[in-house]
Length: 212
Image (cartoon, rainbow, N blue to C red; front, side, top):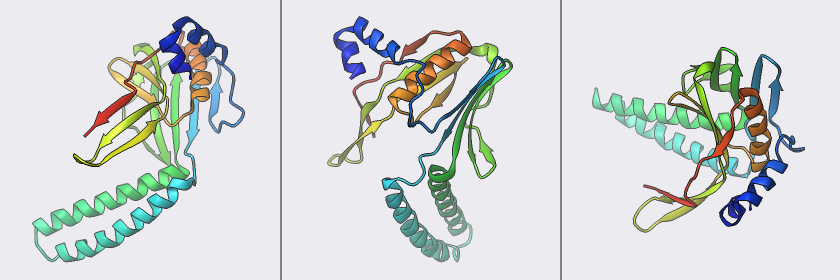
């Protein structure tokens, strides 16, 4: 609704957006730790949801068939071993992704020295983007939710809603916080803006975005 209002009446939309800022949503699971030295946003994974059953079923079947082909291919030297290793790695990554959706945590941390975004599961930490110096932070962006069109083939089309996101730019690196609601975006944006002393701006994305 806010995004639609922005297209029709930009000034009113800005006031409507600003009026919701810095109000912590009642039902949020996000933990915000902020003081004079740091700001830390901890976002737990959603846990068991309806789609988890589909992922569990898919992973179970793919693991069963994957093990069957691994046993067959393992008898073929070199080439078979290579493809067996690829199947094993793919299966492990699928299960890690499933477990992260249940028990994982995303952490955005900024202090006076650095910024980093980490994904944590059972005490293990992974960083897709390397940490940057705090002084390199130059822009704060957000995106509204939008509909994405995915082309699986020439016939099959699927659609999904992409949730809002917050993006902190440090040089050419993006630290992107996803999987959050619009009200959480509004709350966290104001906190980050005040801490970083940066204005925030909306990144324009198409209503429908295609990917092949």
